[in-house]
Image 1 (cartoon, rainbow, N blue to C red):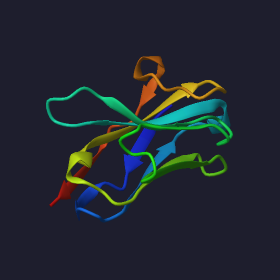
Image 2: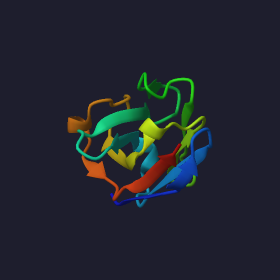
Image 3: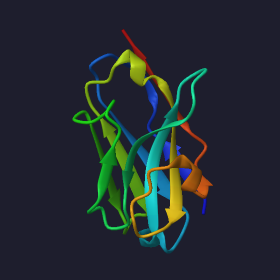
Length: 123
């Protein structure tokens, strides 16, 4: 599975961004998907995750209430909408996939990773 993340950019604090991740697989609905981020000098951390159907969602406390993860299985795409962006949201954002029906939260469980899209939030 190849994952292509896009949608990052330079924005001011308080702005919104929607990240997209397109997957090159005919069985996208068999995959649990996640968004992670890695800031300079820090470990990669989970931002949000979604199970195959979209019925089960997970958000890190740092983005809860400001972000929405969703997926379109017909278009093989998962999204991360981020609102009220903060300087501390600055990071490279990665999407990840695992062939699994249940939601997956741990980065160590994911098998496939996208190349990352950079988000920079200025004050």
